[in-house]
Amino acid sequence: MALTGPGGSVMTREEVDRALTRLGAEREAVQASLLALQDHPGCRLLDGAQLTGRTLERWSAAEPGIGRMWSMFDTYTEALAAARAVRSRRNRPNQAELQELTELLRGSGVTVSAGRASNGGMSLTGGARLSEQVSLTQLVERMNEWYGRIIEVASAADAVWSALPARIDLLLAELGRVQALARSVGVHPGEHPAGDALAEMDRELSSLRAEVVSDPLAFWTPRPSGFGPPDSGPEPVAGRVDTGRYDRSARALDDLRLELQDLLRLRDDADERLEGVGDLLARADATLAEARRARGEVLAKIAATEVPAVPGPASALRERLGQADQLRRHGQWHRLGPLLDTLEGAAQRELLRARESLTAVTAPLALRAELRGRLDAYKAMGARLGVAEDPELIERYDQARRMLWSAPCDLRAAEHAVRRYQQALRPNQGQQAEAERRSGPVDGHPYGV
Image (cartoon, rainbow, N blue to C red):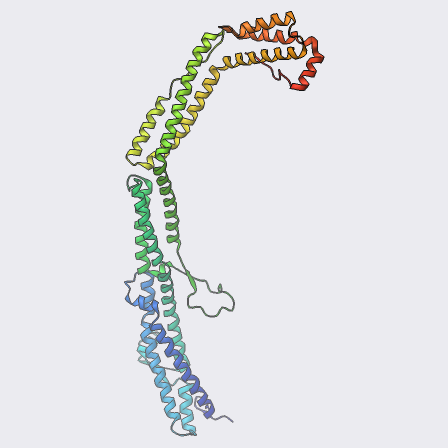
Protein backbone atom coordinates (compact mmCIF):
# COMPACT_ATOMS: atom_id res chain seq x y z
CA MET A 1 0.00 0.00 0.00
CA ALA A 2 1.40 3.34 -1.00
CA LEU A 3 2.26 5.80 1.72
CA THR A 4 0.46 9.14 1.73
CA GLY A 5 1.45 12.55 2.91
CA PRO A 6 -0.23 15.93 3.26
CA GLY A 7 -0.07 16.51 -0.50
CA GLY A 8 -1.14 13.02 -1.63
CA SER A 9 0.67 9.73 -2.30
CA VAL A 10 4.37 9.59 -1.51
CA MET A 11 6.81 8.34 -4.13
CA THR A 12 8.64 5.08 -3.52
CA ARG A 13 12.39 4.81 -3.66
CA GLU A 14 12.22 3.25 -7.15
CA GLU A 15 9.94 6.03 -8.39
CA VAL A 16 12.31 8.64 -7.00
CA ASP A 17 15.28 7.07 -8.75
CA ARG A 18 13.44 6.84 -12.05
CA ALA A 19 12.26 10.47 -11.75
CA LEU A 20 15.79 11.68 -10.97
CA THR A 21 17.14 9.84 -14.02
CA ARG A 22 14.41 11.27 -16.28
CA LEU A 23 14.78 14.80 -14.93
CA GLY A 24 18.56 14.62 -15.32
CA ALA A 25 18.19 13.71 -18.99
CA GLU A 26 15.59 16.46 -19.35
CA ARG A 27 18.00 18.98 -17.85
CA GLU A 28 20.72 18.00 -20.33
CA ALA A 29 18.27 18.39 -23.22
CA VAL A 30 17.13 21.81 -21.97
CA GLN A 31 20.72 22.99 -21.57
CA ALA A 32 21.60 21.83 -25.11
CA SER A 33 18.56 23.64 -26.50
CA LEU A 34 19.44 26.86 -24.67
CA LEU A 35 23.03 26.74 -25.90
CA ALA A 36 21.82 26.10 -29.45
CA LEU A 37 19.40 29.01 -29.16
CA GLN A 38 22.24 31.31 -28.15
CA ASP A 39 24.14 30.28 -31.30
CA HIS A 40 21.09 30.44 -33.56
CA PRO A 41 21.99 32.73 -36.51
CA GLY A 42 18.61 34.45 -36.31
CA CYS A 43 19.13 35.37 -32.64
CA ARG A 44 22.67 36.60 -33.24
CA LEU A 45 21.57 38.74 -36.17
CA LEU A 46 18.57 40.11 -34.30
CA ASP A 47 20.78 41.08 -31.37
CA GLY A 48 23.05 43.17 -33.59
CA ALA A 49 20.53 44.65 -36.02
CA GLN A 50 18.87 48.05 -36.03
CA LEU A 51 15.31 46.76 -36.05
CA THR A 52 12.12 48.55 -36.99
CA GLY A 53 8.42 47.84 -37.42
CA ARG A 54 6.94 44.44 -36.73
CA THR A 55 10.32 42.80 -36.08
CA LEU A 56 11.26 45.35 -33.43
CA GLU A 57 7.91 44.89 -31.73
CA ARG A 58 8.03 41.09 -31.65
CA TRP A 59 11.72 40.79 -30.78
CA SER A 60 11.38 43.32 -27.98
CA ALA A 61 8.66 41.11 -26.52
CA ALA A 62 10.51 37.82 -27.07
CA GLU A 63 14.18 38.67 -26.41
CA PRO A 64 13.87 39.06 -22.59
CA GLY A 65 12.79 35.43 -22.54
CA ILE A 66 16.37 34.32 -23.19
CA GLY A 67 17.51 35.64 -19.82
CA ARG A 68 14.41 34.36 -18.12
CA MET A 69 14.91 30.88 -19.54
CA TRP A 70 18.48 30.73 -18.24
CA SER A 71 17.25 31.94 -14.87
CA MET A 72 14.53 29.29 -14.81
CA PHE A 73 17.09 26.71 -15.94
CA ASP A 74 19.29 27.65 -13.00
CA THR A 75 16.30 27.25 -10.67
CA TYR A 76 15.54 23.89 -12.28
CA THR A 77 19.18 22.81 -11.81
CA GLU A 78 19.18 23.93 -8.16
CA ALA A 79 15.95 22.05 -7.45
CA LEU A 80 17.27 18.91 -9.10
CA ALA A 81 20.54 19.21 -7.16
CA ALA A 82 18.60 19.61 -3.92
CA ALA A 83 16.59 16.47 -4.70
CA ARG A 84 19.76 14.53 -5.47
CA ALA A 85 21.29 15.71 -2.19
CA VAL A 86 18.30 14.44 -0.23
CA ARG A 87 18.42 11.13 -2.10
CA SER A 88 22.13 10.69 -1.42
CA ARG A 89 21.78 10.87 2.39
CA ARG A 90 21.17 7.12 2.69
CA ASN A 91 20.60 4.13 0.51
CA ARG A 92 17.07 3.63 1.77
CA PRO A 93 15.47 7.01 2.48
CA ASN A 94 12.99 7.21 5.35
CA GLN A 95 9.41 8.41 5.17
CA ALA A 96 10.28 12.05 5.84
CA GLU A 97 12.90 12.05 3.11
CA LEU A 98 10.52 10.40 0.62
CA GLN A 99 7.90 13.06 1.41
CA GLU A 100 10.52 15.80 0.86
CA LEU A 101 11.61 14.20 -2.43
CA THR A 102 8.00 13.86 -3.56
CA GLU A 103 7.44 17.56 -2.89
CA LEU A 104 10.61 18.49 -4.79
CA LEU A 105 10.01 16.20 -7.76
CA ARG A 106 6.23 16.23 -8.14
CA GLY A 107 4.84 19.00 -6.05
CA SER A 108 5.09 22.75 -6.18
CA GLY A 109 8.24 22.73 -4.19
CA VAL A 110 10.22 25.04 -6.46
CA THR A 111 10.25 28.69 -5.45
CA VAL A 112 10.52 31.09 -8.40
CA SER A 113 11.29 34.77 -7.82
CA ALA A 114 9.23 37.45 -9.51
CA GLY A 115 11.98 38.17 -12.02
CA ARG A 116 11.93 34.55 -13.19
CA ALA A 117 8.16 34.30 -13.69
CA SER A 118 6.81 34.14 -17.18
CA ASN A 119 4.40 37.01 -16.58
CA GLY A 120 6.97 39.32 -15.07
CA GLY A 121 5.79 38.70 -11.51
CA MET A 122 2.34 40.31 -11.87
CA SER A 123 -0.60 38.73 -10.08
CA LEU A 124 -4.09 38.43 -11.49
CA THR A 125 -5.26 41.30 -9.24
CA GLY A 126 -2.66 43.60 -10.71
CA GLY A 127 -0.33 43.69 -7.76
CA ALA A 128 3.29 42.61 -7.80
CA ARG A 129 4.31 39.24 -6.41
CA LEU A 130 7.71 38.60 -4.91
CA SER A 131 7.71 34.85 -5.67
CA GLU A 132 5.54 31.87 -6.49
CA GLN A 133 5.66 28.12 -6.00
CA VAL A 134 5.74 25.91 -9.11
CA SER A 135 6.60 22.33 -9.99
CA LEU A 136 9.50 21.22 -12.14
CA THR A 137 7.01 20.28 -14.89
CA GLN A 138 5.52 23.77 -14.81
CA LEU A 139 9.01 25.25 -14.93
CA VAL A 140 9.82 23.24 -18.07
CA GLU A 141 6.50 24.24 -19.64
CA ARG A 142 7.31 27.92 -19.06
CA MET A 143 10.74 27.47 -20.61
CA ASN A 144 9.16 25.73 -23.60
CA GLU A 145 6.69 28.58 -23.97
CA TRP A 146 9.45 31.17 -24.08
CA TYR A 147 11.57 28.99 -26.33
CA GLY A 148 8.71 28.69 -28.85
CA ARG A 149 8.15 32.45 -28.94
CA ILE A 150 11.85 33.20 -29.40
CA ILE A 151 12.60 30.49 -31.96
CA GLU A 152 9.57 31.52 -34.02
CA VAL A 153 10.84 35.10 -34.38
CA ALA A 154 14.48 34.07 -34.84
CA SER A 155 13.75 31.38 -37.42
CA ALA A 156 11.41 33.61 -39.44
CA ALA A 157 13.94 36.45 -39.46
CA ASP A 158 16.75 34.07 -40.41
CA ALA A 159 14.65 32.62 -43.26
CA VAL A 160 13.98 36.09 -44.67
CA TRP A 161 17.58 37.22 -44.27
CA SER A 162 18.79 34.01 -45.92
CA ALA A 163 16.40 34.35 -48.85
CA LEU A 164 16.22 38.02 -49.82
CA PRO A 165 19.28 40.24 -49.19
CA ALA A 166 21.69 38.16 -51.29
CA ARG A 167 19.17 37.91 -54.12
CA ILE A 168 18.54 41.65 -53.96
CA ASP A 169 22.30 42.28 -54.15
CA LEU A 170 22.53 40.08 -57.26
CA LEU A 171 19.59 41.92 -58.80
CA LEU A 172 21.21 45.27 -57.99
CA ALA A 173 24.39 44.10 -59.70
CA GLU A 174 22.36 43.03 -62.74
CA LEU A 175 20.57 46.39 -62.63
CA GLY A 176 23.96 48.10 -62.82
CA ARG A 177 24.82 46.12 -65.96
CA VAL A 178 21.46 46.98 -67.53
CA GLN A 179 21.96 50.66 -66.68
CA ALA A 180 25.36 50.55 -68.41
CA LEU A 181 23.67 48.97 -71.43
CA ALA A 182 21.05 51.73 -71.34
CA ARG A 183 23.72 54.44 -71.37
CA SER A 184 25.45 52.76 -74.30
CA VAL A 185 22.30 53.07 -76.41
CA GLY A 186 21.51 56.63 -75.36
CA VAL A 187 18.79 55.84 -72.80
CA HIS A 188 18.97 58.24 -69.84
CA PRO A 189 16.57 59.21 -67.04
CA GLY A 190 14.41 62.13 -68.02
CA GLU A 191 14.85 61.40 -71.72
CA HIS A 192 13.31 57.94 -72.12
CA PRO A 193 10.73 55.94 -70.14
CA ALA A 194 13.15 53.01 -69.82
CA GLY A 195 15.74 55.32 -68.23
CA ASP A 196 13.15 56.58 -65.72
CA ALA A 197 12.09 52.99 -64.98
CA LEU A 198 15.68 51.93 -64.29
CA ALA A 199 16.24 54.86 -61.93
CA GLU A 200 13.00 54.07 -60.08
CA MET A 201 13.98 50.40 -59.86
CA ASP A 202 17.32 51.36 -58.33
CA ARG A 203 15.51 53.32 -55.63
CA GLU A 204 12.99 50.52 -55.08
CA LEU A 205 15.62 47.78 -54.68
CA SER A 206 17.75 49.90 -52.33
CA SER A 207 14.68 50.66 -50.24
CA LEU A 208 13.61 47.02 -50.32
CA ARG A 209 16.99 45.82 -49.08
CA ALA A 210 17.01 48.32 -46.22
CA GLU A 211 13.50 47.23 -45.19
CA VAL A 212 14.41 43.55 -45.35
CA VAL A 213 17.45 44.10 -43.12
CA SER A 214 15.64 46.23 -40.53
CA ASP A 215 12.21 44.54 -40.54
CA PRO A 216 12.48 40.97 -41.88
CA LEU A 217 9.18 39.87 -40.33
CA ALA A 218 7.36 42.30 -42.64
CA PHE A 219 8.32 39.86 -45.42
CA TRP A 220 7.25 36.71 -43.59
CA THR A 221 3.88 35.02 -44.08
CA PRO A 222 3.12 32.49 -41.31
CA ARG A 223 1.49 29.26 -42.39
CA PRO A 224 -2.06 28.88 -41.05
CA SER A 225 -2.36 26.19 -38.42
CA GLY A 226 -3.51 22.86 -39.78
CA PHE A 227 -2.04 23.42 -43.25
CA GLY A 228 1.20 21.55 -42.78
CA PRO A 229 1.83 18.11 -44.30
CA PRO A 230 0.48 15.20 -42.24
CA ASP A 231 2.91 13.44 -39.91
CA SER A 232 5.61 15.97 -40.74
CA GLY A 233 6.53 16.53 -37.13
CA PRO A 234 7.37 19.90 -35.57
CA GLU A 235 8.70 22.52 -37.96
CA PRO A 236 11.02 25.33 -36.76
CA VAL A 237 9.82 27.57 -39.59
CA ALA A 238 6.10 27.38 -40.32
CA GLY A 239 5.57 29.86 -43.13
CA ARG A 240 7.14 31.29 -46.22
CA VAL A 241 9.16 34.32 -47.32
CA ASP A 242 7.12 36.91 -49.20
CA THR A 243 9.20 37.69 -52.31
CA GLY A 244 6.46 39.56 -54.19
CA ARG A 245 8.24 42.94 -54.43
CA TYR A 246 11.51 41.28 -55.41
CA ASP A 247 9.82 39.13 -58.06
CA ARG A 248 8.06 42.13 -59.60
CA SER A 249 11.33 44.02 -59.83
CA ALA A 250 13.08 41.02 -61.36
CA ARG A 251 10.39 40.64 -64.03
CA ALA A 252 10.43 44.37 -64.79
CA LEU A 253 14.22 44.29 -65.13
CA ASP A 254 13.98 41.37 -67.57
CA ASP A 255 11.49 43.33 -69.68
CA LEU A 256 13.74 46.39 -69.70
CA ARG A 257 16.76 44.27 -70.61
CA LEU A 258 14.91 42.85 -73.60
CA GLU A 259 13.86 46.35 -74.68
CA LEU A 260 17.43 47.62 -74.43
CA GLN A 261 18.77 44.59 -76.26
CA ASP A 262 16.39 45.47 -79.09
CA LEU A 263 17.91 48.96 -79.14
CA LEU A 264 21.38 47.41 -79.12
CA ARG A 265 20.49 45.27 -82.13
CA LEU A 266 19.08 48.38 -83.76
CA ARG A 267 22.39 50.16 -83.18
CA ASP A 268 24.27 47.29 -84.77
CA ASP A 269 21.86 46.99 -87.72
CA ALA A 270 21.02 50.67 -88.22
CA ASP A 271 23.48 51.27 -91.07
CA GLU A 272 22.28 48.22 -92.98
CA ARG A 273 18.62 49.04 -92.41
CA LEU A 274 19.04 52.68 -93.45
CA GLU A 275 20.89 51.52 -96.54
CA GLY A 276 18.03 49.11 -97.26
CA VAL A 277 15.47 51.95 -97.04
CA GLY A 278 17.61 54.07 -99.35
CA ASP A 279 17.86 51.18 -101.80
CA LEU A 280 14.07 50.73 -101.81
CA LEU A 281 13.57 54.43 -102.49
CA ALA A 282 16.20 54.37 -105.25
CA ARG A 283 14.46 51.41 -106.90
CA ALA A 284 11.13 53.21 -106.58
CA ASP A 285 12.62 56.34 -108.21
CA ALA A 286 14.11 54.25 -111.01
CA THR A 287 10.78 52.52 -111.56
CA LEU A 288 8.97 55.86 -111.73
CA ALA A 289 11.58 57.15 -114.18
CA GLU A 290 10.98 54.06 -116.32
CA ALA A 291 7.22 54.69 -116.08
CA ARG A 292 7.67 58.28 -117.29
CA ARG A 293 9.81 57.11 -120.21
CA ALA A 294 7.28 54.39 -121.05
CA ARG A 295 4.44 56.92 -120.88
CA GLY A 296 6.13 59.03 -123.52
CA GLU A 297 6.60 55.94 -125.67
CA VAL A 298 2.93 54.97 -125.25
CA LEU A 299 1.75 58.42 -126.17
CA ALA A 300 3.93 58.30 -129.30
CA LYS A 301 3.16 54.73 -130.42
CA ILE A 302 -0.40 54.03 -129.27
CA ALA A 303 -3.31 56.00 -130.68
CA ALA A 304 -6.54 56.99 -128.88
CA THR A 305 -5.36 55.69 -125.47
CA GLU A 306 -5.73 57.30 -122.05
CA VAL A 307 -2.41 56.92 -120.25
CA PRO A 308 -2.40 57.63 -116.48
CA ALA A 309 -0.04 60.26 -115.12
CA VAL A 310 3.13 59.12 -113.34
CA PRO A 311 3.49 60.39 -109.72
CA GLY A 312 6.59 62.23 -108.60
CA PRO A 313 9.35 60.82 -106.37
CA ALA A 314 8.78 60.42 -102.63
CA SER A 315 10.66 63.53 -101.52
CA ALA A 316 9.00 63.48 -98.09
CA LEU A 317 10.39 60.01 -97.45
CA ARG A 318 13.82 61.23 -98.49
CA GLU A 319 13.59 63.99 -95.89
CA ARG A 320 12.54 61.55 -93.18
CA LEU A 321 15.38 59.24 -94.19
CA GLY A 322 17.74 62.16 -93.63
CA GLN A 323 16.23 62.71 -90.18
CA ALA A 324 16.77 59.03 -89.38
CA ASP A 325 20.40 59.30 -90.39
CA GLN A 326 20.83 62.29 -88.06
CA LEU A 327 19.35 60.28 -85.19
CA ARG A 328 21.82 57.51 -85.96
CA ARG A 329 24.72 59.94 -85.94
CA HIS A 330 23.67 61.28 -82.51
CA GLY A 331 23.04 57.82 -81.06
CA GLN A 332 19.35 58.43 -80.32
CA TRP A 333 18.43 54.81 -80.91
CA HIS A 334 15.16 54.88 -78.96
CA ARG A 335 13.87 57.56 -81.35
CA LEU A 336 15.40 55.95 -84.43
CA GLY A 337 13.70 52.57 -83.88
CA PRO A 338 10.05 53.63 -84.42
CA LEU A 339 11.03 55.99 -87.26
CA LEU A 340 13.03 53.30 -89.01
CA ASP A 341 10.16 50.80 -88.71
CA THR A 342 7.84 53.37 -90.30
CA LEU A 343 10.32 54.20 -93.06
CA GLU A 344 10.82 50.55 -94.00
CA GLY A 345 7.09 50.04 -94.40
CA ALA A 346 6.63 53.31 -96.29
CA ALA A 347 9.55 52.52 -98.63
CA GLN A 348 8.06 49.12 -99.44
CA ARG A 349 4.72 50.76 -100.23
CA GLU A 350 6.43 53.40 -102.35
CA LEU A 351 8.18 50.75 -104.44
CA LEU A 352 4.87 48.91 -104.85
CA ARG A 353 3.18 52.16 -105.94
CA ALA A 354 5.91 52.79 -108.50
CA ARG A 355 5.57 49.29 -109.90
CA GLU A 356 1.80 49.63 -110.14
CA SER A 357 2.25 52.95 -111.97
CA LEU A 358 4.67 51.34 -114.43
CA THR A 359 2.25 48.46 -115.01
CA ALA A 360 -0.64 50.85 -115.61
CA VAL A 361 1.39 53.02 -118.02
CA THR A 362 2.79 50.12 -120.03
CA ALA A 363 -0.53 48.22 -120.26
CA PRO A 364 -1.15 49.39 -123.90
CA LEU A 365 2.35 48.28 -124.93
CA ALA A 366 1.75 44.93 -123.19
CA LEU A 367 -1.53 44.54 -125.04
CA ARG A 368 0.16 45.33 -128.34
CA ALA A 369 2.83 42.73 -127.64
CA GLU A 370 0.13 40.21 -126.76
CA LEU A 371 -1.72 40.88 -130.02
CA ARG A 372 1.50 40.46 -131.98
CA GLY A 373 2.09 37.13 -130.28
CA ARG A 374 -1.44 35.96 -131.02
CA LEU A 375 -1.11 36.95 -134.69
CA ASP A 376 2.11 34.97 -135.06
CA ALA A 377 0.53 32.00 -133.28
CA TYR A 378 -2.46 32.04 -135.61
CA LYS A 379 -0.13 32.24 -138.62
CA ALA A 380 1.76 29.17 -137.37
CA MET A 381 -1.57 27.38 -136.90
CA GLY A 382 -2.51 28.19 -140.48
CA ALA A 383 0.77 26.73 -141.67
CA ARG A 384 0.07 23.48 -139.76
CA LEU A 385 -3.40 23.35 -141.31
CA GLY A 386 -1.94 23.91 -144.80
CA VAL A 387 -3.93 27.11 -145.47
CA ALA A 388 -1.14 29.68 -144.96
CA GLU A 389 -1.03 30.48 -148.69
CA ASP A 390 -4.73 31.25 -148.90
CA PRO A 391 -5.05 34.76 -150.48
CA GLU A 392 -7.74 35.88 -148.04
CA LEU A 393 -5.65 34.79 -145.03
CA ILE A 394 -2.57 36.50 -146.44
CA GLU A 395 -4.53 39.73 -146.91
CA ARG A 396 -5.98 39.64 -143.42
CA TYR A 397 -2.58 38.82 -141.94
CA ASP A 398 -0.87 41.69 -143.72
CA GLN A 399 -3.60 44.12 -142.63
CA ALA A 400 -3.30 43.10 -138.96
CA ARG A 401 0.49 43.16 -139.12
CA ARG A 402 0.59 46.67 -140.60
CA MET A 403 -1.67 47.92 -137.80
CA LEU A 404 0.41 46.30 -135.04
CA TRP A 405 3.82 47.34 -136.39
CA SER A 406 2.93 50.93 -137.27
CA ALA A 407 2.91 54.01 -135.06
CA PRO A 408 0.69 55.25 -133.68
CA CYS A 409 -1.09 51.94 -133.32
CA ASP A 410 -4.88 51.82 -133.01
CA LEU A 411 -5.26 48.93 -130.58
CA ARG A 412 -8.97 48.49 -131.05
CA ALA A 413 -8.65 48.28 -134.82
CA ALA A 414 -5.60 46.04 -134.55
CA GLU A 415 -7.42 43.68 -132.18
CA HIS A 416 -10.34 43.53 -134.61
CA ALA A 417 -7.96 42.71 -137.47
CA VAL A 418 -6.36 39.90 -135.44
CA ARG A 419 -9.80 38.51 -134.65
CA ARG A 420 -10.76 38.60 -138.38
CA TYR A 421 -7.60 36.64 -139.22
CA GLN A 422 -8.50 34.09 -136.53
CA GLN A 423 -12.03 33.74 -137.85
CA ALA A 424 -10.74 33.07 -141.38
CA LEU A 425 -9.11 29.90 -140.01
CA ARG A 426 -12.38 28.45 -138.64
CA PRO A 427 -13.68 26.73 -141.84
CA ASN A 428 -11.03 24.07 -141.13
CA GLN A 429 -12.36 23.34 -137.65
CA GLY A 430 -11.61 19.63 -137.75
CA GLN A 431 -7.94 20.21 -138.51
CA GLN A 432 -7.85 23.09 -136.07
CA ALA A 433 -9.25 20.89 -133.26
CA GLU A 434 -6.62 18.25 -133.96
CA ALA A 435 -3.91 20.93 -133.92
CA GLU A 436 -5.20 22.31 -130.63
CA ARG A 437 -5.22 18.82 -129.15
CA ARG A 438 -1.52 18.44 -129.93
CA SER A 439 -0.26 21.92 -129.01
CA GLY A 440 -2.90 23.24 -126.56
CA PRO A 441 -5.21 26.26 -126.95
CA VAL A 442 -3.79 29.40 -128.45
CA ASP A 443 -6.58 31.75 -127.52
CA GLY A 444 -7.24 30.61 -123.98
CA HIS A 445 -8.74 33.80 -122.53
CA PRO A 446 -10.52 36.90 -123.77
CA TYR A 447 -8.56 39.93 -124.89
CA GLY A 448 -9.43 43.58 -124.84
CA VAL A 449 -8.00 47.05 -124.68
